[in-house]
Amino acid sequence: MSPTVFREGPFRFLFFSREEPRRHVHVLSPDGEAKYWIEPSIELAVSKGLSAVDLKRIQKIVQNRKKEIDDAWNHHFSN
Image (tube, one colour):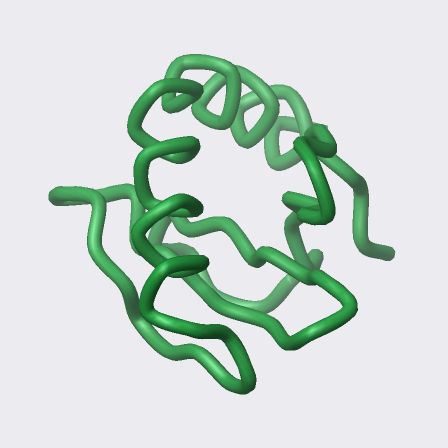
């Protein structure tokens, strides 16, 4: 199960259930994918196929919507 947290532009932000306990978010787009750690700080974990410009844009989105990601994580993984 991979619940979508939100979409912004060409990017889909989601979780992969039962992957690992450290808070993170995956990002998919037609051009590639990335994974960002949310804690202890927001940082790129891994990416494939995305440009440096896209990665900076995504990181800014994650920073701006961190509370939404945290709330979705808490809701999804508390069930």
